[in-house]
Image (cartoon, rainbow, N blue to C red; front, side):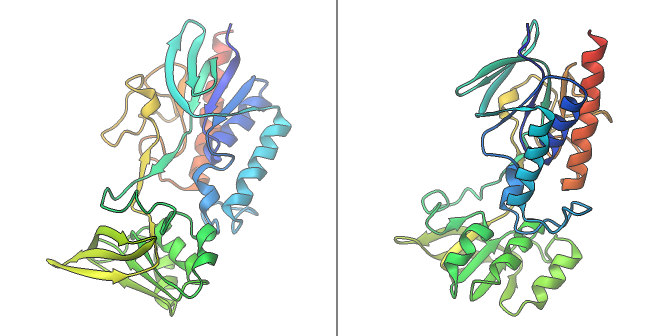
Length: 304
């Protein structure tokens, strides 16, 4: 017999909204998460793509708020990293590093992991100048020069957060123009201590006990850019390796779904930016979670 009716992998906005919905429909639900409530959003200093009273809230506040709703709905939580999912006679076996359970259905809402640059010094200086959280490390860099790598929303959001602490922030991005939404670009251009370095790539992160400078490739030349820290935001990769070849995925590794978030395997659903064609906004992820949950409710109902 299955341990649960629904197992939700991931405790981000998509996963927690899915769990609340299935639990309120009377299904025995568990959420499995390796980081904590909120997922990647806990690193966001100010939320601006979630409508209603939650807009403007810090990410580390939103996660616990959603978890509280899930707790009240009767959702179980397991802190573990899912390593494998396999088809089982009773549904699906979910194998974690410390826990194994069986569920009739599976909602995959594991989100995405930050893409690495894959360059010299990136791993060596992790935690010693290489960071991914401006709200966490910004106060430690008061009066320092820092760099942000990337031209999207996340990169410019972090640059604005850092502008309250750092002396100078240089945004290094590959394109001629940043790809972030217009309002963020305008705010960064208006900030006195933020500048853009366009058509540039970071070739190496260099230093001694900590980061001291970046090796930049720009217009066929190499140059050194002094800085005390570098914040890397160059896109996301779907965190779906644990699924192997169980479900169909697109070229980027995201799960293919229909309008009801159903994957190529009956009983497996996907929600949030781990699914194909996600717009990667919190409001959309919340809707994905509810849609996947209702599809799971119907699936369990049709099978008694």
